[in-house]
Length: 125
Image (tube, rainbow, N blue to C red; front, top):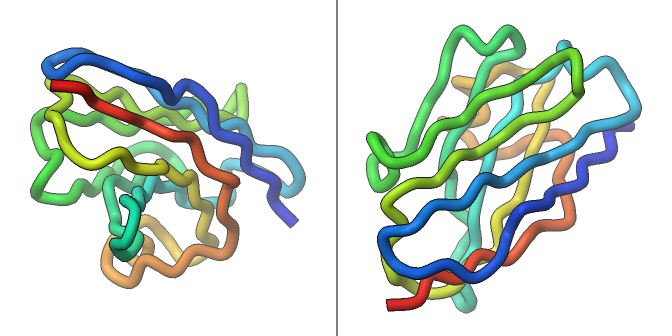
C-alpha cells in the first residue's frame, strides 16, 4: 500500500501561484511514477501532470503546459506541483496519484494504483 497526503491548496487570485505537495508513505516511493489530477464539480477527473520515478521525464496536459511544473524529491518522498499564472475557473480538487506502470501510462490512461484524498484549489477573478 501507498498512502498519499496532499497539502498546499487554497484560495488564490487569478495570476497568482500555488505549490501543492504530496507526501507519500508505505512502499518505496522511488519505485512509482507520480502524477496530479483534478476534478471540478460535475466534471470528470482529468489528468494534469505526471513524472517518472527518476524525475527525468514529465508529462503535462495541454491546458497547463508552460504554467505548471511537476517535480519530486525522492529523499523526502514528496512530489510537488508548482502552479503559476493560475486562471479563474471552476474550483477543483487536486489529487495526487501513484502508479507502478510508469508516467506515460499515468498520463495516457489515467488509472493509477493509488490516490490521495485531494486538496481544494480555488482561483478567484
